[in-house]
Image 1: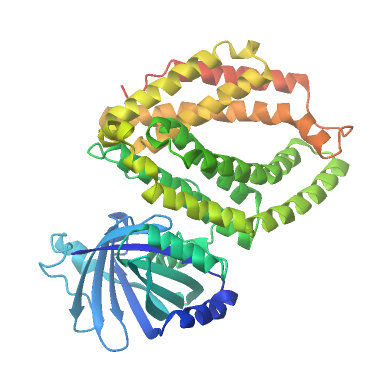
Image 2: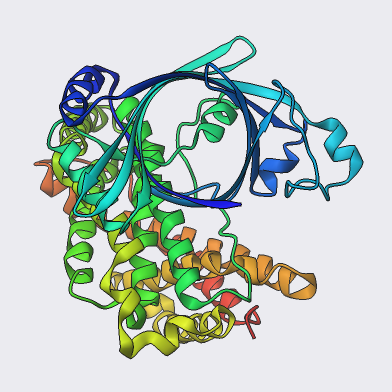
Length: 482
């Protein structure tokens, strides 16, 4: 068994030739035609277990590869892998593979599910004592009659420091724009089997009680950044309200995680990254605000004006996302997550190495206590005070989701589901009130201060009553973490 450390980057097909010219100046590249056949059961048992099985032909021989570890990540992928030569395009599951202990019915059900066809150019590049392999892939995923082309870069660390991967990525970005990669070739094939997504919601984070706080933080942040990047890719291809919303949710989750783990992650880089995240969230918020306004009115004249404003804002957002600043932010964040000074801070070492279960209980208790205090007598609070309660509810929701996989068994699992269900009702109620409170200011911002909206006091009072009832129900709910 070996370990693969690679940085994935996405590149536009129109930029591949320019990158290839730059690469040729770095040294001679070897060109390989690759045909990879991926295997799984009809129910995708291997994928669900975080494993992948492929048999690849490189033009001269067949090699079987099994990978495990961070099947879903962003940018930097660190995975265990097992490789061996095989006779042909059929897996050989012997005692020398981690799949040997699977039930016979699972092994018997393994079959090809898709292929990845790639023309790969590879070469070794040395930077500051580190040796890296640069691979430029042009290919397509093929599943039955469905095909999807792609271009990507893989930088694999052969020897030296992981920082060299990011330094080379920035060197390449100065030649052609690159984005932090989120999609493995396994996922590219699996995507062909599903409907085209209009947005990507957060996914469960595979935490376990034996993990350290540092390991849990890295996994949580990786999941948040992945959600953002997947939605950013959708926005770059076909902008829509739901992708904007989920991209903002992903950034809020990042910022909530940084707040929850603040004592662990403070260093010379974290403040700047927080500032950049706030800026990017604000750019997305400009478009999201117009979507909210459109939902708040049925007036045809006002809707026409808002649709025109939204079209202009979507165009501005596209220009922002295609700029260098968001690309640099994601790359900087991924590097900080993998190699940042916070990982070596002596003051937080004991906390980083402690078990995540105790940390989760303390963190969730603190947030819940603050929420109970802030949301008391919700009917009498001002819009600003209810907004503060809403922010705490969001932070509590994200925390409950971050640590959710620690609380899945038996009665605890049911309490976790009940808590999240009631918390979702709180968020929904407070969110509608916040949207309603923001309508006048948003109209004014867009030069529509005199426009008529469908807001009345009876509706507002009914929303407050429902939100207050939801808050009371949540406060009376026994926390799942105690």
